[in-house]
Image (cartoon, rainbow, N blue to C red; front, side):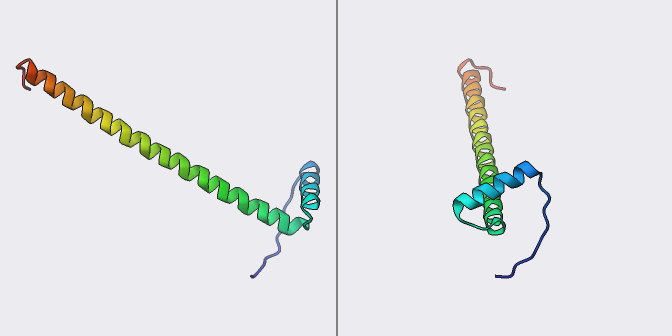
Length: 84
């Protein structure tokens, strides 16, 4: 796998947090940080997909409710002899 060296700037507290977490995992900082970034990207993508799925479900439910309401109103008009 090809690699690219990059420079990131983080504050001292964040660096300490990353350094400590990498040490606990028994990893060097660079690969630990890269894996953490990938995990975050995948988590964010999954969360976005879940929001989109939920929005689609809500839209479908709203359309179904609207259609049912229109059908009920039409049936009520027909029942009372006031066809539109």
